[in-house]
Image (cartoon, rainbow, N blue to C red; front, side):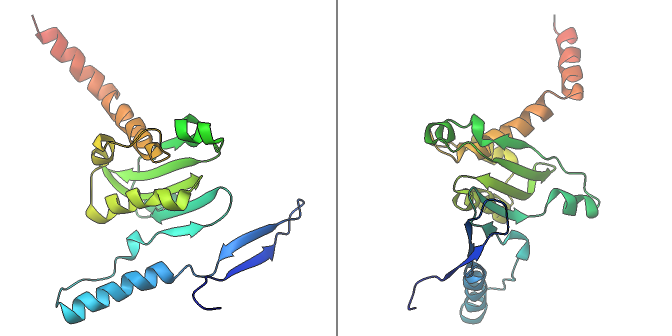
Length: 187
């Protein structure tokens, strides 16, 4: 077999007889991450610990499904009432031009921080990395919003999802009331 990745084909037990592919090398990324931590701890005496909260998970289906961090249900189980902005690929220009509009991005956030994310759509595995970086660095959601995304790219879906969340916060009832009060105070 050499260096090739092995993929098992499993006959789908559905009405439409076909094949689905599953990645049997799913742990390679996690193993590489853990090895880096072991080396840093042993050689460089850098005290690092594995953070399993930020390990991405992929299912290579069509469309791809990628996930990182907490799900909405897991956040609720922990007593967190998360904000869950979503944005569909059907409203992203690159997805429209490529004819791959199925799917969406779903963010699980609390107090301007990303707790988890799911990407179901074209190249979902590739698109998850920006969100993984945001979680790893503890970046605020607003950071994704102000990041310039090349146009037209599928990665714009992240910015659009965050802007959906920001729009809801910006134009909340309390914000509108504050603007109205300030407006009345001005001459």
